[in-house]
Amino acid sequence: MRQVAAKIAQAIMLILAVIILNFFLIQIAPGDVVDALAGGPDGAGEASAEVNERLRETYGLDKPVLVQLGIYIGNVARGDLGESFIFNRPVTELIGARIWPTILLAFTALAFAILLGTFIGTVAARKPESPFSAGITVFALIGFAMPAFWTGILLLLLFSVQLDWLPVSGMNDVRLPRDAGWLERQIDTAEHLLLPAVSLGIIYLASYARLSRASMLEILESDYVRTARSKGLGERSVMFKHALRNGIIPIITVMGLQFGAVVSGAILVETVFAWPGIGRLAFDSVNRRDTNVLLGILLMLSVTVIIANLLTDLLYRVADPRIRVGGEDRG
Image (cartoon, rainbow, N blue to C red):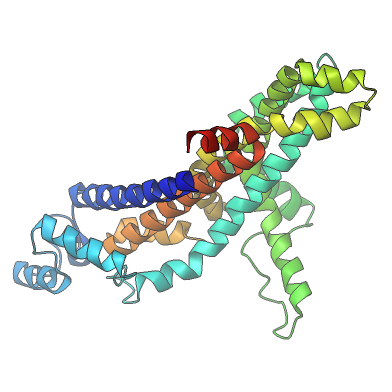
């Protein structure tokens, strides 16, 4: 329990460091929202220098950077991410409407990659010299070589344009009746989610398949696996009840490290399928220098990744009893 509390405290300190780092990264970027409204970073747009200064005073951009940072940290501590300079709406409201589709896409893609990749890798490890096992290596190389957005375009052309099996874009069908039932709406969302999730997850599927295959090949040579076989246990029981529990430990570790990359990849895939996540909002915020929205997006993504790593650490302790025993002995 003490170690969990320490991990949570470290996560809080890390979030504070991320807030400060993101703030200074935004500050050193050329221009601000006033320059964007004026027509360019040189301030030589339609608005005069006097109007620009007045706008900076209104937005609080005329204050020293450290004062702005202190105000921003205080507001974040109260749960206030400020208002969008462009949309004139609270940042939490803008992000709240878009963050969940992005998280849904990222988690679905990751679950698809982990479950199917682990199963394929485990099956391949049973017969490491078989053509199927060799095919895993080839599949992994192809998966690594294809960017997620390129895979998305290919799948879109095949299953949506040529075969007309799945929706082209969006998260819901605009033709769906307003009185449609809950199950019908969930099926519609799942149909729209399938191609983006597969496009994003296939590169990680290849990674997890190869990783689980290598991990299982090593574990299958362990003494306790030989003991289980000598007791007459079936091969399926040995693989999935004894070896797999230790085999997924490296997968859990990689899962936590890759979650940030999955979320970043989700933003790219969203542009291909017009998925209503935060990708477009982030793009518009960069172009218009909407600082509060951009800081809010970076903070939300950072917090999501930190929480995912914290949960990964807890799962690691559940999967490997030796860590819990070691922690209790040290406590």
